[in-house]
Length: 104
Image (tube, rainbow, N blue to C red):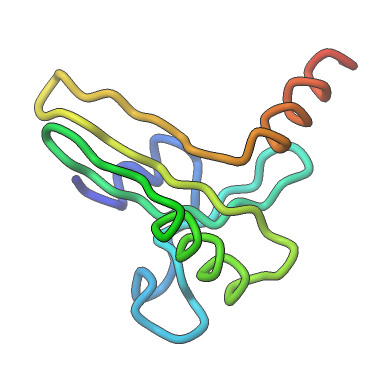
């Protein structure tokens, strides 16, 4: 996966050093609706298991970037033309995004 091409695909901005520093955690950021997402991007050919520990680290990293930002896991599964892209966000955020669409 090219993080650059995936960021362009979803309209996100890449983080400097892709999470290697103490402040610029996560791989990219995305403005959507009333949300600023800090995104951790993962790509696997077959599967990826998410646990409370994994989600906790994504949330902690988001807080280090911006306490008002929302964590997201951007997961790409598969290879070649057979990729599926998933966004893992908290359900409350999804509800808010849906409600915002229904008010339009």
